[in-house]
Image 1 (cartoon, rainbow, N blue to C red):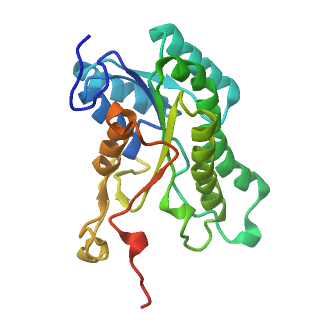
Image 2 (image 1 turned 180 degrees about the vertical axis):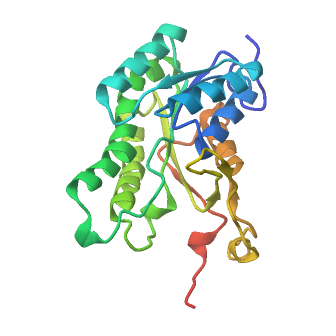
Image 3 (image 1 turned 180 degrees about the horizontal axis):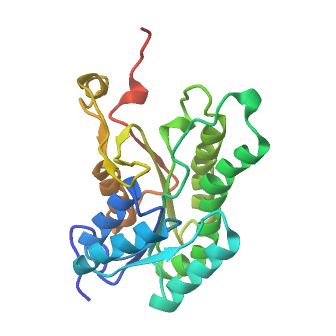
Length: 261
């Protein structure tokens, strides 16, 4: 069987990427596809997902499943489809989540809104891992969970988001212990990553960045989606075989910089 030496995974490897239609998830899916791996994107955005698959199909074997990671039955059905398609699964990237960290003033944060953040960002990660683990055990595969630097630092009115991402970090090392010797589990906490947005009329709006945005990072620039995608590629590969249970902060050094003024 041929092997892509740049990634270290066999070309028959199957990787599931949740939330892979836009932003960081899209970059992850494209990076893995270009490395020669079979990629399954799971996302709630059906129309965008199907358009993306048609665009990327000439580059390799990429498929789309419409599912909400916070819905147990939909996740079960999605992983059953993966098994039916390929018979195995080598890696999972849990990227799906609510991207807006602001949930409003604490005194007005409803239990429904709180639970929505927890259900999508944290419970969704748990459900996908649970339904994937049998296949990952068979393949000695790997999981990469996407958290956020907001698990360790915050802005106002981000309690629900911070709690959900902190839970992802903690769950990562717990799963790494539970699955030791069978499945490696790691986590990435991105900092400020420039991501295009989609306007209400469907137009792509590039992130607006100033020199100040870049200069306040120790690395001299705001992060790019490829910064995260390349780390995911590494953590899924045998080249990272001695790494498990870890959380990697990729933020251009921002969490190491003291700012008083």
